[in-house]
Length: 508
Image (cartoon, rainbow, N blue to C red; front, side, top):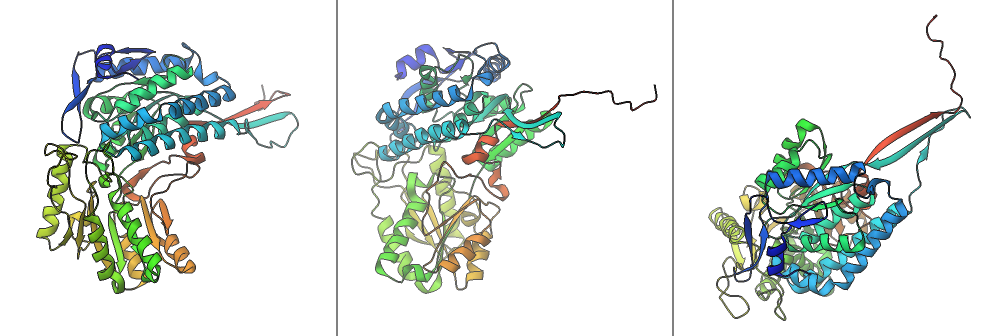
């Protein structure tokens, strides 16, 4: 895997099978969130680099370099499985790189790499097991009618900074399985593992030009990819404001668009889930996991705790006590449970949300400040303590808007209807959870929640086989599962007349 010196020397823009620098010669330093020190330099591409990359992807799709769309499905699936094997081989190195790049713990980085390998295996198995087409009965032995799926074409894949390689894999694996070519734009602040994946794809035997990457900012690289007339599909994961711009840029060319945007996800806890000591401990533990894994920088984070009033005081007291004990520090340090925020800008944003919440009447139960510096969390790092805000209500910005940091708000309810109303009182609809010992209530509440994923007595697990997407302003389109593969395909009806005859529609 390339180190910083090699990255700078060869470049981090990959076009038509060749690594190079930006046309402009611009570069960007990648900073370690734990101490703000630069540890890598990447090319800072722009619209010129995008045009070159899209042209290479189009040539590869149209048959110039390897004819990937016409590669047999079995061969495409085999390549994806080889990529999964290479990810397993490089798990430790990639996990460490993901930790340093994004600020998460090494263990979180390792788990991410495992999930990336799972995604490649899943889409390999899915595409390999599919039927070649769906026969449509035309009512005549002389007519052969079949519905088939074909690749979309050139795909622009724009990924976020919080789960760099995982989110890239959710797009790259199905795009390749379906026979597409692509240009990927990773976040400009966490691009390193996506760069490494492009190397692994080449090592696995992917033809030149099929996989292209342009490192650079969203306002130039992302915007140009979204509007480019030779891009057939754009898939974006990120914030609502940027996703709206992507959709607007894509509209004039009427390209396919998939958007996975933000979330303001409710974690609803009924009192009966806490009736036993074990149940109480589990619900508290999972509330911490929901809110504070990866410092809350997760689109599906359970950032809104909605707890039944009768257990609220006990629950929040224990939650706050345990939140104060979470060990903050550099992701690679032993025993660290939570890393820094990804950037100084992100920490400033979190601080502003907490300040506004306190002014609006929230009660601070834990956190709410930068931690004291130590050897494992330097003062220059972008750390922020896990924060619990009690006595919150819907009019607060911190309850309505996506904070994307280690901040948990607490609301209470008395009845099932009130719990559902609070959980659904959001413009987002990505994910949510319900905790109860009553199986009937669990099904009722889950059925009424307007969120793309609902967990019952759990939080955060996902299955490659299940679709992932949201309602409302959480986006359009689906990732993972059969629907995730379908996003990267077009449907064609082939009608073959085996015995053509004159129509004789007109007298002549």
